[in-house]
Image 1 (cartoon, rainbow, N blue to C red):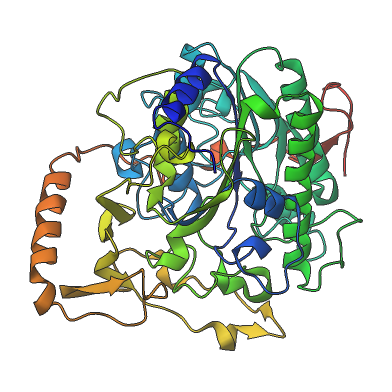
Image 2: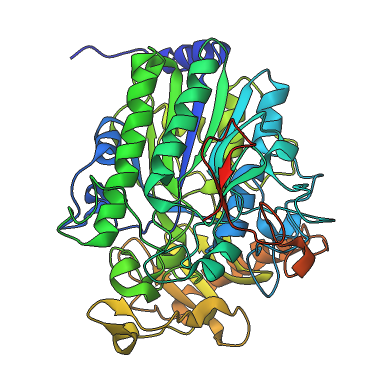
Length: 503
């Protein structure tokens, strides 16, 4: 067997950095650690995402920086813990009529890459703020955070109200609206055509920018409740409607990857797929799978923050599995380093994993990860150990699920303070041998570990500066509306803004 010299990967890395690769970052919504066939789901059909996992690098210990949508997206785009940007507070997420949003003084990944000569685009879910001073001013939307191209997008989210078979128009229109650029084109959303519109926007951006280095942020609406599908995917999965959702999402990812291949860009394009946080298990059959991990969305147990993550870059990333502990915040410095930006300004919580991606080493990336629930430090991951200072109560959802359908939306662990238990000494789990966090270890024999963690936590707390919360500033006059006062419309063509029909 031919042995390559040790210095060869470094030369390859240097050459690739100089060619400035394209980046396609695909961020799924509420997809659980166990929702994909490639992550062990026994009845989920295989799809293009699983092909990416086989052809690329699959991570088994990838952590989100938060267990809910708004803070996890802020962390992704800034490389920083949400507490540093004020994306924390009792509500934990931004609502459609909040005045807050991602602060303008936070440098986003799009802005940083734009400074390096990249074309930047965003399609899909935003959920980092909409209006600030008046209705429809859009001062928090993607174009104000470094994205030059903004295609079909959900300024808020695909809310569980967005189900025409379950809710009337007057209820759907409050939470369910779709935009093109910064103008609402559907209110409420027509779900069956949503994925096609997202894919069309992606293809448009890549085609228009194929001759320049580009960064595309594709934030998928799936698999956030409500469940939806277009005709060719409805009632096809043996897993039910959630499986249909996963299959449609996977098809969309395949369409994006195939388009990259058709344009002969695959050799110079890094595609990353990951989820924002764990699944909404309280929705029963429509809630996703943690793959046996404890907890779920909104909790600091691993079921809420450990996510599937895949990196694909033909010819550069060797297929395989990585067990190192990594964070969604690592994407920011990783992309910058691969784009040719060396050094860290010291303000990031993420660490570049470029060498890990390119198989230049198999070293651990982080000594410690800090897991917050809003502004409360709940736990840390330290080496093989997960150490909980506070835990949210776990709800048994059996009584809320009739024939797999949720009777009501129960999220017991949404509260970061009121429905929690403080542990002194902290709970300790060995995640390498006990990934389900089922068997707490004795604290006394591990006093030296707790002492080391205590020192690191104290050092970390000194870096946290008071920042005004952006969450919870509800104002009825900021409610997004396509045509006041009815706020009900469907534009037939996003480019013909004068053409619309009332529902």
